[in-house]
Length: 98
Image 1 (cartoon, helix red, strand yellow):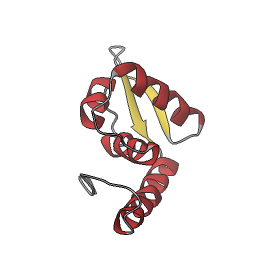
Image 2 (cartoon, one colour):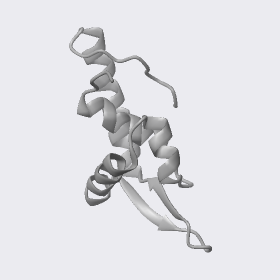
Image 3 (cartoon, one colour):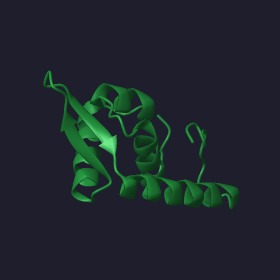
Image 4 (cartoon, helix red, strand yellow):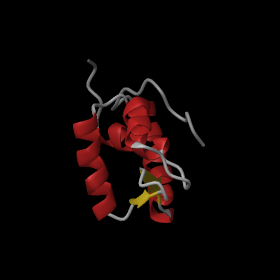
């Protein structure tokens, strides 16, 4: 498996989220990471106020991005693009989601 910098992993996770909420399975698939590693990152992002954990009426757990998370995602995307253009990191996929 190819090494991805933490910044790129964080961006992948943030890009998998939306305001409506998504399941951890969706996040794992989108970010190509196993559930335990994603869960660890999600907990860090919840503590930082970037995302929130919510439950549907039927008890389904979802994760959704906050306004702070959207602003952070946009800044991280810009930084990743800059670092990629400078040849400092290798990123296979950028701007998958607006």
